[in-house]
Structure formats: structure tokens, C-alpha cells
Length: 444
Image (cartoon, rainbow, N blue to C red; front, side):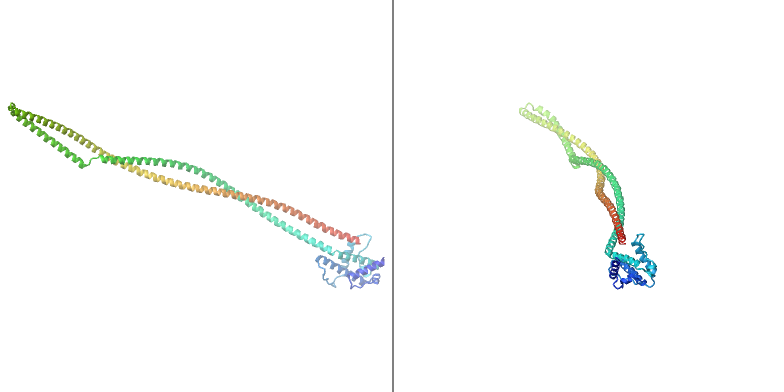
């Protein structure tokens, strides 16, 4: 058994340090220089293995050993591995100065065997340890990335919350503006209804004025017709003078006829004695009778003519009186017509002014109505626009709320996964350390 341990130690030393000279005699009779050199080679190899584990490189330059390193530092380094590898109270694996300067074969072989087993174990665990370190690094990087993502999510959530608060403020502001717009719209509706009533009243007044104007136009037409008719009936001054001359001529002719009749009666009275003297004479009697008949006929004719003249004179007098009365009426009518014309002119002027003022009021009312209608249309459009904006903001708020909930859920899930991953990494690394510790204990 002792020979087997010796051969195994020699083979292991030649495997790790081909340039290191070791024989069975050296193991059976170890010297201080031999064991110190072995421990120094172990320290260098162990440091090299640990460097390869940490750096992940297979070729690591060995650090040159300085002359200032004391035997105590070497002793402490070797004891660190010996104490951790064997924990049995009855087994003494502590390396002492005696083992350095006055070594014995038994103690030297035991310590060589333990240290070579540690080298073999650590050499075999390089790949596993690298994978564990890589996994740990990856998990650490992933943890850092998730932590960074968590911070980014926190910032995004803070920004979304701030944006949501601004959106809520905008929604409240738009809601207040919508309420003001609705109130203004209702006021405009009431004002429009009042303007419509005023417009209807003004339209009725305009219709009444137009009807009055038409009546006055008709009255003016009738007055003009009457004036024209009166003008046709009025006798001119020349006609009146002609009628007066005709009357004077008729009166003069009537006087001449009276003189002729008086002369005829006077002549007849003068001839009466002669008629009486020759009444016995038949011829004279016959002539007298004949003259009497002619005289009677002439007298009747004169009477008829006189009667006709009197009748004509009465008619002319009556016509003259009518003409005088008509002239008086015409003068009065002219005065009335002039006054009526002045009144009509004044009324027409006032009526024209009223129509102009009314038309101006109507135009102003139409302009105001058009303005109100335009404002009403603008208010309706603005109301629809605000309603659409409000709906869009509501939808955006709902979407932001849903996104915030989703982000919160994602944040919670991510944080939970991070905790799980961190726990898994920690547990895996602890398990790995426990496995290494258990393996080392088993080796010892």
C-alpha cells in the first residue's frame, strides 16, 4: 500500500511538473529543500489553476516568485488548503515549520498526497467552474440588465403617470371649456329665439307699413285721378269770357226783340183806325183778316221766340251759376288738393324715412342673424370638435391606463422573475460551493 502511494505521488508529480525531479528515495528520505520546492511548485500551480478559472484562459503566464516571499507566507498558503480539505479531528494535516525544515517520510507523503489530490480536483473543476462563472456572469449581467430595465420601466411609468396627469388636466380643462361652450351655445340659442321673435315682429310691422304704403299709393292714385277729372271739368278763363259774351249778346238780342215788339205794337195801334175805316171794304177786310192772321202768327212766333229766349236765358244763367259754383269748388278743391299734396308729400317723406330706417333695421337684423347663425355654426363645429377631442382624449386616457396597468403587471412579473433568477443563481452557486466542499471532504 505504501509503495502504491509512493508510485501514485511520483506519477502525479511528473504529470504536473515534468521538470521537477522526484524519486522514491527522496520520498522515503525527504530533505528540507525538496519539500520546500514541492510546496512552492504547488503554490504556483494552484495559483495558475485559480487564475485560469477566473480569467477563462488556458494559457496564463505564471507570476515570477520574488525572493522576498518568506517561508511563513508559503506555510500559511499551504495550510489554508490543508485545513479546509480535512476537517476530521483525529487527522492532523497542519503543515508546520518542522515539516519544512525536518520533514519525515510519513507526514510528507500524507501532505503531498492531499495537495496532489487538491490539484487534480481543481484541475478537473476548471471547466465546470468556468461554466459556473460564465453562468454567474451571465446571470449577473442579466440581473443588471433587468435592474436597468426595471429602472427604465420606473422612469417610463413615472413619465406615463406624469403624461396621464397632464392628460387628465387637459381633459378637465376641455370639459370646463365644453361646459362654457354649451352654456354659450344655450345663450346663443335663447338670443337667436329672441332675435327670431323680433324679426317676426319687424316683418309684421314691415308688412303693415307696406300695406299702408300700398293704401296710400292707391289713395294718391285716386286723388290724382280726381284732380285730373276736376281739371277736365274746370272751365278755363277764355271759355268763361266767351260764355259771358254770349250771355251779353243774348240779353242784347232780347232787348232788341222787345223794342221791335213794342214798335210793332205801336204801329199796330196806329193802324187800328185805318182798319176800322176800311172794315166795310171786303178786300181791305180780307186783307186785314189776312194781315191779322199773319200778325197773330207773327205774334205767336214772337211769343214762342221770347219764351225760348227766356228759357235759354234761364239755362244760361243757371249754367253760369253752376260755373261760378264749380269755379269756387275748383278753387277750394285746388286748395284742398295742394294741402293734400303737401300732406301726402310729408307722409310720403316720413313713410320713405320709416321704410329706409326699417330696411336698415332689417339689414342690421339680417346681418346680426347671419352673424349669430355663423357664430352658432362655429359653436356647433367647435362643440363637435371639442367632443371629438374629448372622446379621443378619453380613449387615449383609457389606453394609457391600460398601458400603465400592463406596465405595472410586466414590472411585477419582471421583478418576480428577477428575484427567482437571482435566487436560482444564488442557490446554484451555493450548491456548487457545497458540492466542491463535499468533494474535498470526500477526497480527504
